[in-house]
Image (cartoon, rainbow, N blue to C red; front, side, top):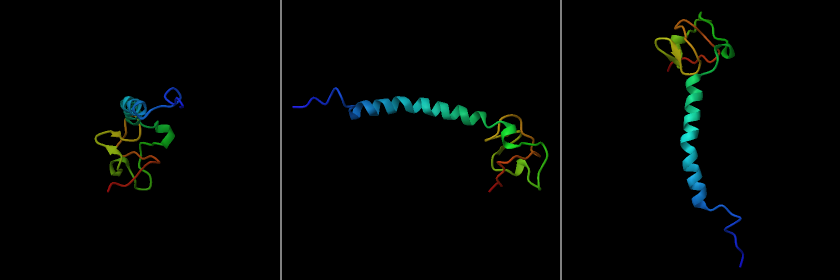
Length: 86
């Protein structure tokens, strides 16, 4: 007879570990997305470009923030992440 209990991880252990890790992963992902990308990384500018500006972007949150870019965002600004509102 082979003793496999000391060498194998059982399903209960894996499930408990996953359940314990889920809140930590959610907290980490939430804080990373809340911070947003640096303005320099996305070539943010406070003026429109080619008729495109932040208040027409899907990521813009009035009055002066963005779901994807950190810091204060001008409604008339623009960056490389610009996506037209639906």
